[in-house]
Length: 209
Image 1: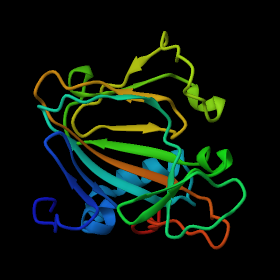
Image 2 (image 1 turned 180 degrees about the vertical axis):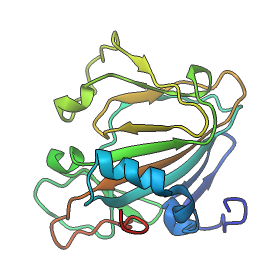
Image 3 (image 1 turned 180 degrees about the horizontal axis):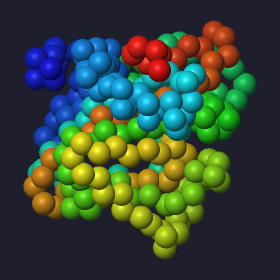
């Protein structure tokens, strides 16, 4: 499916160090029923509840020769269809034709991220490193040095999934073993945005849970 998709759209990003597809389920909708089998839907309903929907989907492939790393950060931006000045929302960015904005913490706290791993992932090919319980401390200012004494490497086997909150501090290292890291990143929320803001990629879960 991915190889046959139209890679000329703005949602595709390809370079020597990265291949990524933003709005993955919009670009490749046939992936939805494959990924959202009964086991996956039951997992979502058990952990999140029954009112959640997809708000973001990204496919990315970190090639085995990639030598870049990502420093510790939180995922603070949501994608919306339009830009409007609303209290508590900002700053704003634009990526691949969609507006990004940092919403109030209450919205970020109610987002869940699921990362489906298509390759064995360990510290040698960029497995996420996280700081446990850091998502419970709200938005952190990154100007100061981060204490990583309790850092945990989240190694995931091929076919496995990782669940996290966007406020969790996380990073990834350079690839050192020439092995790819392919991941499908999906974010879920149950919140409505204040009008006239709209989620840019709001997709109901396939088939009722």
